[in-house]
Image (cartoon, rainbow, N blue to C red; front, side):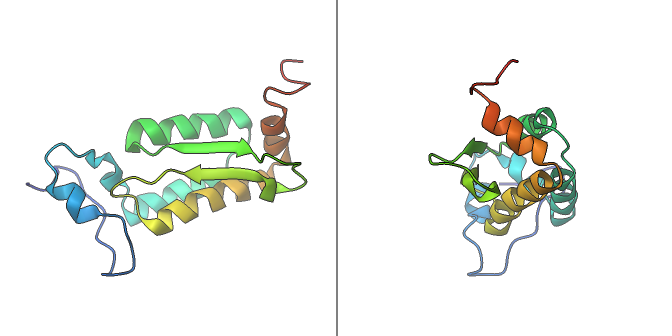
Length: 134
């Protein structure tokens, strides 16, 4: 397959990642959107996620990640009592072409943003709860 008409992420060193980048490039029907996330773009994304300031902003970024890159992100409160940000689960679903380090950097950036603005975590915990819609 020819290379896409847009800049793509450089490959990781052999053995350090399981992103299946080459298999994605070889597949004729693969979703190549994730390859648009170059290392420079990843840095910009992480900075943007660290700057979230509301639950609406977080949900907007979640939607944009899916629309532009095909990245599915799940953010939910843990099944047991949540006493800190550790109880909030931020999961980046696996997909071909998504680097392992990126899958770790996105949740870390989101939690950093929540630490700066704890009201995001409170609003997330309130979703569907007693005070939702009040």
